[in-house]
Amino acid sequence: GDSVTQMEGPVTLSEEAFLTINCTYTATGYPSLFWYVQYPGEGLQLLLKATKADDKGSNKGFEATYRKETTSFHLEKGSVQVSDSAVYFCALIIQGAQKLVFGQGTRLTINP
Amino acid sequence: NAGVTQTPKFRVLKTGQSMTLLCAQDMNHEYMYWYRQDPGMGLRLIHYSVGEGTTAKGEVPDGYNVSRLKKQNFLLGLESAAPSQTSVYFCASSPTQRYGYTFGSGTRLTVV
Image 1: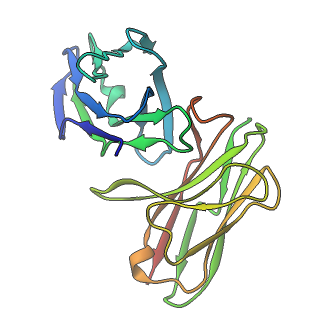
Image 2 (image 1 turned 90 degrees about the vertical axis):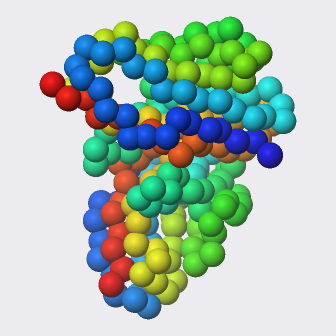
């Protein structure tokens, strides 16, 4: 079946460090890919998305590129801030499917 | 602000009591979803709906019922609450499958 695997957390970085959160997927069809962010005490918010191979989603300094050859959608940011501390979820949906498949989430903590 | 509104935000129930969680969206979305989020368990889909008058089971439907009598509302019912249903419940909606979800801010339910 369809699935998403994220790097295990928690991830702890210092402010201004480079961030990578790995996400790989297994899909029976042709997926759209998403990253969601959940700040403490809040619901999930869509951070970025990509709908076809080689597309790059970007938002708030975060980027992720849809790599069909490696079935990956890694999240990156060049210089993280304390305010980026949150849980990040990678997700996919297959064309014709009715619901998203989520990864387990990666907790990110940024220290000043 | 347009979006997904969940009520109540917090609730404490005694074992065996019943309650209904309300999710309302004002974006005219077709698809609506109920998830639960437990520590270390990520998001698990309880029930979902692909349009007014429709409902379908997700991964963990036991002990819950839902109704979608109006397009904008999706109700989650607990007929006889159990301590295992202590969780944070999130509602989400989407205009199409591949668009991505808009989440509510959650309902924190404790069953004692």
